[in-house]
Length: 270
Ligand code: ADE
Image (cartoon, rainbow, N blue to C red):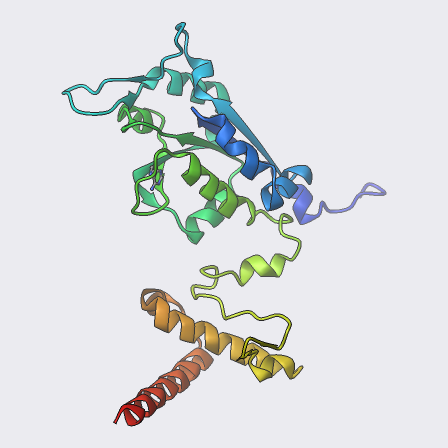
């Protein structure tokens, strides 16, 4: 073995993540990309995010990117030519993935964010107007992604949602790696409640166990409260989560406690 050689550290072995954003409103990205985690990830050299004006790939004097829909109807449709030219200029062969933001897409979530965080190059295509000419996602083999069942004015804010959720999962981006692992959804459950000083605020107390210094008891309490929250607020998540024996025991305790509370409330009413 060569002297001075050492195995590359995990961080150094990773290919650099790159995002290219195609939009009609590049200024919408200025603030969010210059602040907080997204800023730090770029400054640390862990990710490159480049924002491009789709009109740079038009060839007419008016830089037209849209046209009326065939078959009539309201609104305008994004034309295929500038989008294809732009994607073809930015694409780096099979290492690139094209993501088109549209309310008709696959639902974005924590799982998709962690898959995107592993890709070397993602091109985010922001729609406007009534949407894309359907040959755009088809011809570019784009993954169509929606951030939820809500219609926004365009794909820019959804692209920022995807960028923010994805970049924070790239190793090295968060100061405390553990915090991404315990995030809501990363574990399949909602997070337990958090508290900081003061211990008593406007009559509301911090649960005494958190002040006890007993780390085992605190971990158990946190897991139990995560289960309680998920059961109350997102039972759909709970039915899909993989639960340990301890989780089942904690859930049984929660059910007994909640049944007790219901009984107490009834007695108070009677
Ligand atoms: N463009 C408009 N609404 C959207 C949504 N919900 N998700 C992704 N892109 C969109």
